Length: 263
Image (cartoon, rainbow, N blue to C red):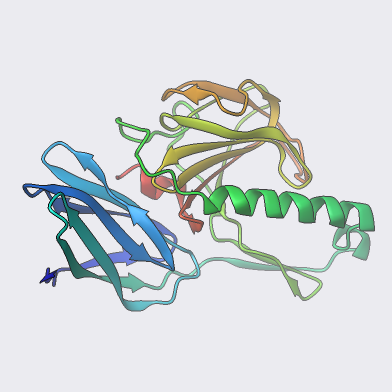
């Protein structure tokens, strides 16, 4: 067994997507990264291999190691460590006092939200072994240059809520929402919190989500290309006005979708 020594450290912030590249070798058939208790496959791209891993917005800052395993067509296996340096980011926190009825759900709504949480968690747990995209990722609203609220933490009546896991994009009701890249639709339906929602699997554990739509224009199982209109913006679910919640999960990690545009 050969030991592959990798010493270059990669710098990345909390809540970011990180592309890792490895050179090709004669007879090399697979490259797999072990990160955050998950096995993440590499895809072949021209003369090399690549994958994209997610650094969760709550990832522990500091130096971490990613184990890389290479397998060859003659049965050989080599291992190496890729070192990454995670820097801390500071996200906004808002504390609010509201009437209890706006914080506490009914028994039936709690049950529904619980079922949907399990369904979504199971989707994010699946890692499609190949990259389904070939082009750069793009913003789902034509002309949009920035988002807001990624990582924003809200505390209602001293009860902390999960940090906001996506970017909110300004969009009037009826605005066309387009796929950020090629992939497979894995969920397209109305959810309690998220309203009309579309989830797209792009492969390698990368998922994009589009929430609060007024209308859904795709169906589960459909292979969609970059720029395909998935639905129309709206204000469905638990929101106060029309906009698009655009999110990305990378192997379950909550990452700023804008960080994927650089990959």
